[in-house]
Each structure stands twice: as C-alpha cells, then as structure tokens.
Length: 230
Image 1 (cartoon, one colour):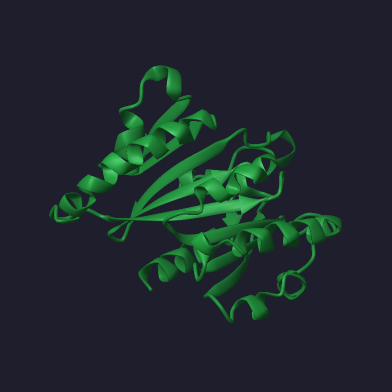
Image 2: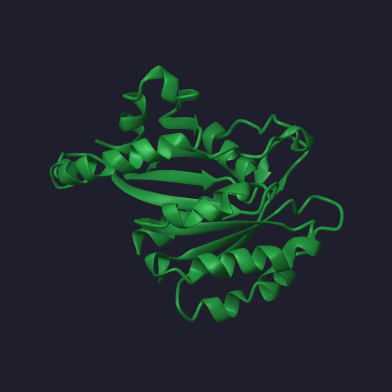
C-alpha cells in the first residue's frame, strides 16, 4: 500500500484535506497523523516486497523538505501540487505550517512522497529522517540575517546518522524579493562545496514570477529525480 493510498483510508477526524489533481494527491495534516503513520509503517513495510512486484507500480521515494519558518517551503509544495497552474496564494498571506504537509507526485515511473515539516517543529525533525531519499533544505534568500541560524539547523540535521550520505538540495527561495542574495552567495555561506565531500549536493534559485509561475521548480524536480535514481 502506497502512502497516498494509506492517507485515503484514514478516518475523517484525522485528515484535514485530501485532493487528487492530475495524478497528485495533496495531503495537509496535523502533527498527530505522524503517530498513526509511524504505527502503520511496520505493517506497510511487510507488504512492500509484494507491492514492488506489482506490474507497473511506481517505485516510492521519500523527499524531506525542511527549513526555517517562512522560508518558502509551502510555496514549493503548492507549486508541486498545482503542476502547470500558477501559484495563487500571496506570500504575505501564507501561514506557517502547523505540523506537516505531504504531496505525492507520480512521474516517470517514480512516486515522490514529499514531506514538508514546519519550521517551528525543529525538535521533531529527527523523527522524520528515516528512509529519506533526498533532503531538500529551503532558505529565504532575502533574509541573510537568518542565514547563521538556518545553517546551524541544517548542520544539526546532517549530523544525524540516519541521514548520512543522503543527497542534499538547497532551494534559495524568494530570489525575486528585495535584498535577496544570489545563489552563489547562499552556496558559499552554507558551505555546499564542503558538504559535497560526503553526499551529492545541488542548489536551485527559486522565485515566484508576476504570472504566478514558480521559476526554478522544474530544475528542482529534475534534480530530485536525478538523485532518486542514483
């Protein structure tokens, strides 16, 4: 049973919203659902070997999206969910993620289970590090005063044994905002070259255009798929 199928089987009290759009299941949930998922995981893993033999079934990969509060994580997930549609929510109206969001995207024979964990829940981040195929770390390029805090949070995650060697993608978001630092400066500050000694790394600049199109989304998706295939 895949993750998206499991969420669809949850009782109404446990799910806030589930939408199916062009092969994408979008799930928004409170943190409490994680406990249910964790309990269910052992049962799901017993079926994994049988499920993988099912003809035509997409291989599942877990992509974890982390970052400080208001860094642009929710905008990235919204863009994944809306495909070619413009991102309609205004940045200033966005609310911090309470708990986590999950977006399930099926593409090119791969099912990407993309988990976004709220920036205010850093103490819970380690609970989500198991079985991660790619770590996406989101940075607000327009808030250099938070770079040091964000780097410390990232290094704390990367120090965990459970995520050793997992590919890292840094999204330098809000490149369109006033005062945003270019990706080269972000890459240098966060020491991406040094981090690449122990894992595959990449950085993508992301901005929301006036049309609502998210520039950098396709590049980020391609990099995620590339790392998942390795």
